[in-house]
Image (cartoon, rainbow, N blue to C red; front, side):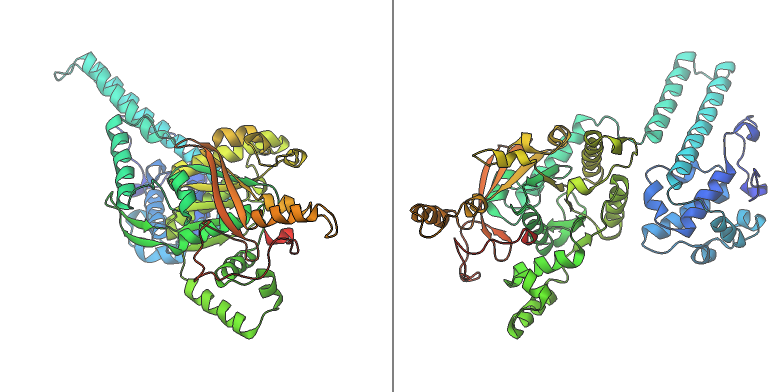
Length: 514
């Protein structure tokens, strides 16, 4: 539409000090296509907002349309030709292009959402080139003019400053931070820990012994939680996520911003389990009922009433679940950004890492390279959003081949990149699981010895911290209630959690319970 036209009249950018407008790098068609894609699907904004700014648009009318649409989207309102009409119908430049009908024509010329980042990158590059042209012209005019007191050294200094400012604006990654700013951030972190009563530099897991070892989950950290099937890694991640969401309290933070002063808003990517199954597991654990019996309807009336009561009490917990399977890392990152913009986000959980896919098609041909892209992407996302990310991971089968089945860093699948990019690596281990599978018959002479050890192992779980950048490694002991897939501190409040039937030597649980 409109071919390679330049906006007429008021819409035409002015040439800077003698540089003809025709020499200014631009692509009107790309601007039209990108704006059209945004008006057709507002999800485009999350894909390109970290790439393009209003100033990257050559046409001032397009710039104003983008600014108006972006403002509405950031305020969680729809940006479409219809909703933008009241804000732009009196715009003189837009009137010259046909009025608000031009917005509808832009939407009809939209590119696909997948192509939008490429167009955004193109417009960003063109915007930087125009800025370089302007700086170059200023340098040339200044060097050829003998008016004023500025000598060539001063002009070089000004040119360097202009180019540096452009490099900082154009770069998509942050540059160096002076020590004073870094120290201020460290003081804010320490102050937040002090305000929480000491001992915690990050978000509490809801389990005292784990918090004491980790100091809480720290912003910008990538935490890997790994284990073999049936060890309970999903159960532990679910317990932690819910503990954080349930404890959420909003208020004034020590740094002056409004946000979570206790607990936090939790995003949970459940790539293997549906949101319904995950919610049922959480509610079952809190109501002390078996989730498989609940979903099968195999419960008494009073138990169902108890389940519904707990559901009503907990429905306000800020826990957001995305159960889309096999998400590419780029799409996962975009959805996390959107959640933070719309509802806030204090911690992200991904169950599990091996189900995330690479965005680069070439990387997907090599599994090690693919996992490397994923872990690097998750670490970058943790830093970008300034939140901790907990990613679950599988372990290789070689754990089962050892007499001591406690996992080690080398047991991580594609362990090189995972171990390298992670700030914390934790393993879930329950010796009870392996001991149960060695159960002899009751008339065997080894049965009493087996039963004695089974009683000692019953309900015991270990979280082995194999790597931690900020603190010591070691083992944290937890209690695991296998009937309800619930982890807690070893010393339990029996008045709140009365003893339940079952114990060592009972029927083994299905792997679906974990």
